[in-house]
Image (cartoon, rainbow, N blue to C red; front, side, top):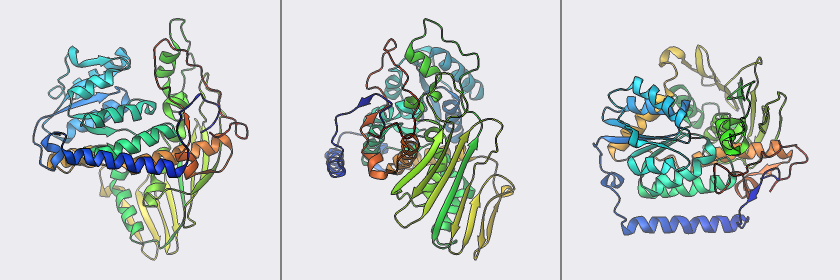
Length: 444
């Protein structure tokens, strides 16, 4: 990736060796499953009517929100175990869920796990695991859950660096070979209006696509408190974890952590074909104490057939807001945005999807309802490789903005820089990497 951060992993960077390694992994994983590893019957395409034990890893707002949706999605589930690195965060999240679902929360003190290894104890305890920690931990947690044979909901993004993405691709392939349910937190793919719009676009309603413009112009997200003061007893790791969004190794930057939804719209529109290359601009205008993330991006992607995708993202207060996608084709144009008309096509095949045609903002619930139903049917959803590719497309855009260089898909996929330390300890020295400087920050 780029030289402003620390650790490189010793891997061959050539595409051919990476692909050969990946094919070997898939062959080995498939052979192991065929040989019969004694997985439960729910992995053999059989309906599953058991009471499912749900485990939550990461008790913040998204974790409690996803758990609420899961508990609403099925009558025969219970929250059985929870984990967080901080006891106070766990207590707050669990208290919220107990008030919302007193009859479905069964988490005594013995199944409330705290610490850097707490995720492993939840995975051991449950049938369905919700991975909702800061995304820097996602590849490690996903691998552990897949190897344990558990169904998984994993929030977006799936990683913050290329080594993490490569790990997720392997884990997704293993999950598929085992028949494990794997749901990605790209919840817009479960929005009724956008689903129908994409179906029509893929069927040719606006003809051949030429350009896509997506926006993610929002306010501040998890900024350092204005009065944030680090006490002497607070270690580097605790300080960064408590303000995780502001550090690239943990969040991936705002473009990867939040605007990845809009990147996923581009990928979805292009039927999940990766872009060839991208260029970008970005930087930080609003001071942010000790963080090292940008607060605005403009990324321009190019696909093999000449389609151009443009994405503007900003996280600043008091500015114009928009969270939409606009598309142009040879037979018309289309858009999806908030308002009375949620989605529409204008041209040879006029069409509208009005807000009155669906309930408001139900996509988070829809994704979990569909996921639980798929597990019950014995044919669990497995989102797999595309979720890793959407994450990598966002990382690719960040790379281009950080370095000021054109970044190809192969460069991004084969990047050797590891942002996430291989081992974490509460008392380790963890210096904050300097903020990237386009034209000076180098690609690795």
